[in-house]
Structures are given as C-alpha cells and as structure tokens.
Image (cartoon, helix red, strand yellow):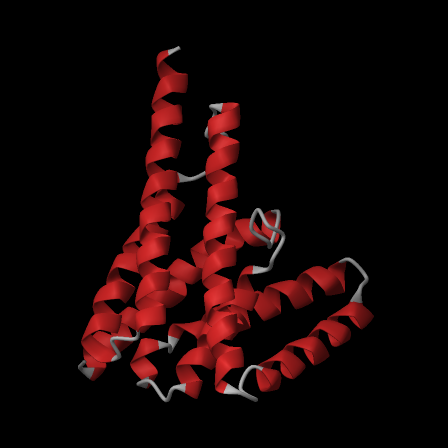
Length: 193
C-alpha cells in the first residue's frame, strides 16, 4: 500500500468515523445489547497487536477508540459524572492487559465479540420485524457498515488470512446487508401506504 493511498484512506476513515459518531453523541453510545461499541474495538485492536499483524490492518481502531473515549469523556463531563470516567479508564486498562495473559483469552474474547455483535444485529432485525417500521434506522449507515466489512474481508485475505477475523467480517457483512435490506423494505412499505 502506497503512502498516498494510506493517507487518503486515513482521511476518509476519520471523516466517516466522525459522521458515524455524531448520532452517538446525540443519543445512545451503545448498540441494542447495551454493550459499548468501543469494547468490540478494544478487543479487536488488542487481537491484531497480539498476533503482530501489519499496522495497516488495524490502524483505524485506535482512532475509533480515541473518538469513543473522547465522546464518552465529554458526555460524563457534561452530565457531572467525572469520577465514573476514571473508574472506566482503569477498567479499560485492566482489560487491555488481561486480554493477552494467555493466547486462549484473546481468542475467546475475539469470538465473543463476534457473537455479541451478531446478537446486537439480530436484535435490531427482530425489532424491525416486530414494528414493521424502519423508524430512525439509517440504511446509509448500515450500508456503510456492510461496505466496510466487505473491504475488511478483502484486506484480511490479502494480509493475514486469519480465520477468526474472516468469520467475524463475513458474519457482520451478511447481517449488515440483511438489516439494510430490511430497513429499505419497511421504508418503501411505509411510503406506499
């Protein structure tokens, strides 16, 4: 990957992540399961570093985690919960080191993150099916998630060929496409009624 290409991807990533984080600041910073998004990223980042994968394969995760951390600090600062922010910081650092005590811990954590991510998307799908209304769900955001997973599959195959990472991104790609299609289906249904 050339330096120019890497810089263009970095700028694109920062802009895309900023846009994706704005709704988080306005509303909820957790997925349907209540598990903060940055927890997935923390495990995934540590997994990539533990297996000594090329920097290009995980460079966006520190940026996204930093964005989430800044956002959470701002939320806690303005809601008067500064002491709680210190507690969460200590927990994050503790988890960061515990993840690599044994190889099986990081592998189980990676698989659990895949499971929890899939479960949160299935909860979103169930909600859409029950209400038959896409509501405030954004097909563009879910479509961007699907596109990201597709590109990460290609990147993973070309760089590390890690089976756990491939399973994660293939699962997330399928579910992101499914949620996107469901949102579009109920959006069209709503307009024609």
